[in-house]
Structure formats: C-alpha cells, structure tokens
Length: 259
Image (cartoon, rainbow, N blue to C red; front, side, top):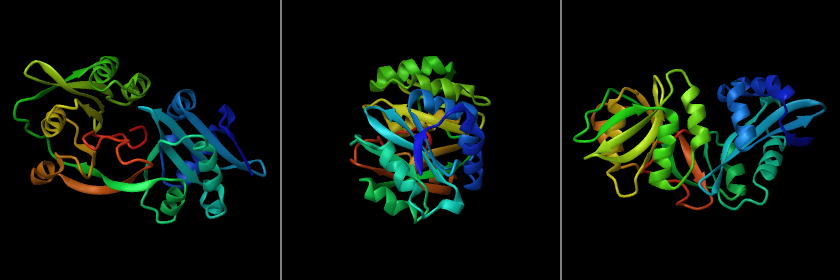
C-alpha cells in the first residue's frame, strides 16, 4: 500500500470512495483543491487503485483532520491507520469531528485524540435576538473581521465558503461593535466565531435571524438550551475529538469539514 499526496488524476477515484461512504464534500473538485492548496490531501493506493483518502488543514496553530474515508471493501485492513499515521506525523496539536462509526473511534483514540463533546446538527425556525443584529457582507470582509476578533486568519476558508450557492459572509454587531463574524449560505450558518468577551448566545441568535435554518452547534454552547426551547431540533451529531481539550472554542458555530 502506498500513501501519497493526491493528484489531479485522482479526483474521480476520490469521489468514488466518498460516494461509497455516502459522503459528498470530496466529490467537489473545488473542495479537494482547497485542501490540497491550504492543507494536505492524501490518498492510499493499493495495486494501482485509490482505496481511501485523508485530508488535514491547519487551523489556529493546530491541525484539523477534515476527512478520512476508506472504500468499504477495504475497511478493516489498516488503510485508515496508515493514512492517519502519515497525516498526523510530527503534529502534536490535532483535532477532528469524527463520525459516530464505532469502528473509527478506537482508531482516533490510538492516535491521541480524546472524545470531548458532541457536535449537534440543528434545524429550526428564524430566531429573535434581543439587541444584536447580523449584516450580510462579502466573505473577504467577514474574514478580516474574524481575524480582528480572534487573531486567526481564515481568509482562504472564507473564499471557499463564499463560492457556495448563496454563500456570503456576515457580521454581528451590538451597540456599534462587531461581536462575531462568520459565513452562511441559503441553508446553513456555516461558521461563526465570537469575540472572547461577547455574549455567544446573543451572537448566534442574531446570526440565525438572518435566514439560515441549520447550524452545527457544540454541545457545551451556551445558546443550545435557548435554541431547543425556541423549537430547534437535533437531527444528528458527531463527536469532537482532540489531543487537548481547549483546541476548539465550544462557543463557535462550526463547519465540520473545516471548523
């Protein structure tokens, strides 16, 4: 088995593995190109055939495992372990949002990842913020605002989010001050980073009042109880796993593929 960097001619094989796992992100050549340019996208090849892939992306000084999928025919044969060993080599601060597949969790734990909290996929009606207001802005402007709030440059990811159908940036303001910045599309609040000293519940309610009807919210997020009381429901969930418990801010609305 050979583990190597993905190349242009691998796109169809990557998409085939993705669809065999009922996964769709890596069927988009733009998503794969984004991770190849701004992170690392690996494929596992056996007898000339791509049988699995893994992708990572640096986020705020840590490394996020964005994808790990194996052709079902080759699952249980050590492909995932080889991919993870290569993807995480030399990296100590690592995290992911894994599936609930019980076969995957022991593999992640063996690589130093510890289950921390559930990432909940919510659906619901428009919310009513108390005082804050969200404004749609170009994705690039939202990236600049997040950098000012958090010190983390997510400009390449905002560029990708802005290319989605209906993709845009947004900022949340309270009393003339920006307290959160993120991205959304016609359906999802894709990402929302909140200022450390701001009210995360108010920021999320304002962002969801702008139209998105779905969001991925960490279990410890302070807005969760308010959203559930307002009629939002939990459709599904993943596990957040990390090598250190404070690598990901649970006050953030997250993009599971890119955080």
